[in-house]
Image (cartoon, rainbow, N blue to C red; front, side, top):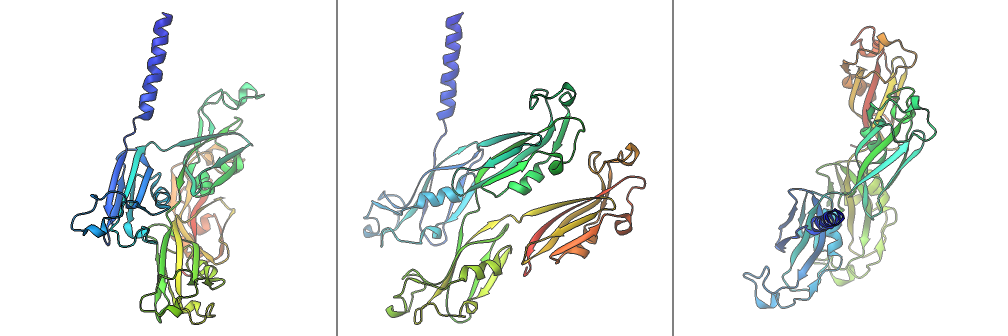
Length: 427
């Protein structure tokens, strides 16, 4: 019997080892022709870039129709290409990159290059956080450029073993108390590198009075939206255009001046390209003020000609930006109390959703008889009323009352729920 047990253990270890190591590597190669798109995809799991190259290390790859001199250098590799691939693609199910992204510098002039990526498809890494009631839950991502994405969050009690130290049996016996609070945690933590949130009724409501609860969170660390770049030469009437297909613009860096002798150099005499330490102070602040929070942004380069950081030098406007999901805010007001909406300077309210009624028996129940909270199928869509009062305002206060929203269910004590975003005031 002992030998059988030992054999079973060894078999289990061997099986685990095999499953752990069998992750086939995929390879994608894209020739560096104008407009070509490099496409990575995982049918199951997410992309994990193992290696990458922009350049040439093989004379045969992407060689068709090319003269020998364009294939001669097989020790050509752009520094940092694999970091760009990891930042753009890791943690995604599919990833598309225009090969133009890698043409910021030329590692081997005159050589026809290609982009090559080795990657695996594996399960995303999930992190689990537990915080007993009135303690703090800490979420963080260790790897640079990664941010928190909340997958699930529950506040309540689903067993009689967790968070029971020095608690009487009456406070832990209700193990069917479960409130889904993913949206509340996500609103505080999504897109952040680290986040701390307290597990208490003030944040999550009271799903079961008299029970000592806990907060369970599951999250992943994913790479933030890839950095996009837009460059516009400083010719009369030129327009600088930034656009997010999804999400809103978030400016990372910006330059009006010249730091590269090649950019916007065509047809220009050498003396107009000589100063590569030319940068207008405050350009990035103008870009942030004009463009942050918008889906698309257009600026005439003339806007930056208020001063000349390098007289006689031909300049350009260069912007690095990401596309982020707009931050959503949630407001709750019990009947006959006030809902307050507000945005920081330069932003205005945009109402996404508003409901007046009752959809559960746990919200706004303090000192209310059971008869006033038992109808949890009472819902009046009041988005248009709230939007009419608040859209385009920096701050807004509205009372949760029948006088404003009508009475969708007589005799029931109701509440108002509003979801809104803060948009740039120039949107």
